[in-house]
Each structure stands twice: as C-alpha cells, then as structure tokens.
Image (cartoon, rainbow, N blue to C red):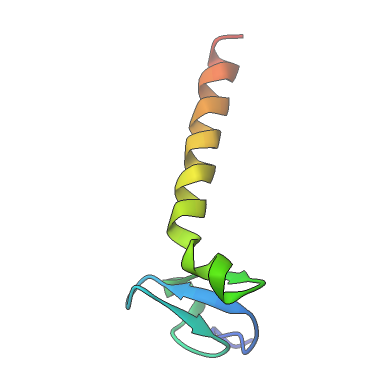
Length: 63
C-alpha cells in the first residue's frame, strides 16, 4: 500500500499549503477533502473538532 494517495485535496502540514493528488506522504497531510476550499480550511476544521471533543470530554466528566 502506498503512503501517498493520488486523489482528493489535502493540506500539507510540512509546506503549509493545499495539494491535489499525490504529494507529500499522507502522514504529513490532513485530508483528503472534497475540494480545494475545504482543504484550505483544514487547520481550522481540526481546531474546531478538537474544541468539540474537549467540550464533550468536559461534559462527560460532569455527569
């Protein structure tokens, strides 16, 4: 199995930019995303998910 997928849009953490198709190894990218605009928001999407998970953990701890 290859470490680089040839489809989808990705956000490269190493270079700080959007990539389409094969690029840097998947371990250095977020995605795949359905389009370039979504991939460009990858860091914000990840931050929002982390905030939601933190909130969920806090709420579960108060039960």
